[in-house]
Image 1 (cartoon, rainbow, N blue to C red):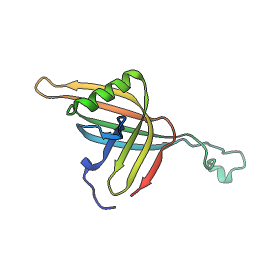
Image 2: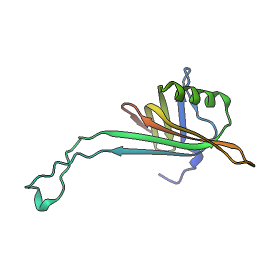
Image 3: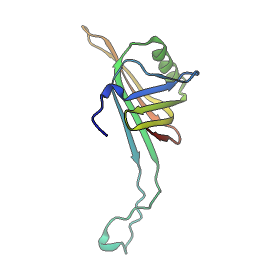
Image 4: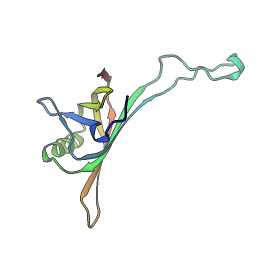
Length: 135
């Protein structure tokens, strides 16, 4: 994979007619995490930790920071947060693939400087199995 433009990493939200890009995001981040299950015991070789293969909880977190640019996606995200709803999202990773599945907005923050624009931070947490489609 060659170097890619950060603006091409997209977060898309299901809007009832398909997926629409969450507008105004200046930074985006996708992180995958997996818990480990420690099965180390008294007879583990030289007391090295042993992990149970295929066990533990997997999760993904998406975060972004941006400014208000598109009233329809701003309103959609705000309503989803206040409803506590789990919705379908796509995260498009350029020249790599698309991660798709259910996420819940876990954090939505607003900030503004006296002489600047109002910005927002959003964090999403996976809420079910995710799929990956390679390009």
